[in-house]
Length: 196
Image 1 (cartoon, rainbow, N blue to C red):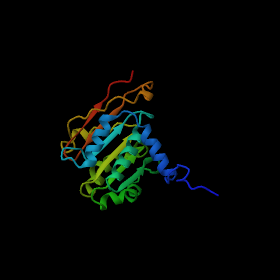
Image 2 (image 1 turned 135 degrees about the vertical axis):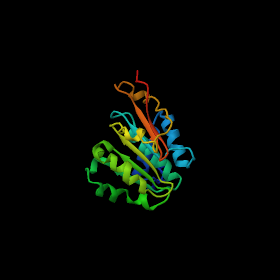
Image 3 (image 1 turned 90 degrees about the horizontal axis):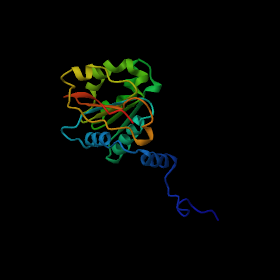
Image 4 (image 1 turned 30 degrees about the vertical axis):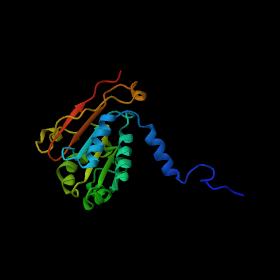
């Protein structure tokens, strides 16, 4: 007689669920960034509408994007993923993938590996983000710093949000972790202390 997964104590979660659970447990530290993301998702009036997380490879940018996705799904928000590895500098492809964030209020647009489509940055800031649905939020992850226009434009400027140190498992890497958050009201860049 064959036993079911439940009888074996394996639960009913498929591979995707098991991977998500393992990844959630692997995100160590990053409380300041998670706090900002949680405030964004809660719709706090003073929370930024755009978070730009950047730094060298391996510091946990994609883990933070996955964290934002999980938290958004738990609150019933529509999650729209755009992976820069599969884009070029043509805004039409980006628009096609991100269109649901323009149509559904409260959508969460997650843009990972943005450095692969960095030439779209000015267009993203000046054109696309302005078309997002009401109460939509955006998380951008990139190895490249945001261009200066994010902090020079008074409409995007906001007080600094601390980035925090990379998790202990990444402290051996050189470089600095950086986190930037912004909203249509304000945005500013913040550099974290160097890893020791």
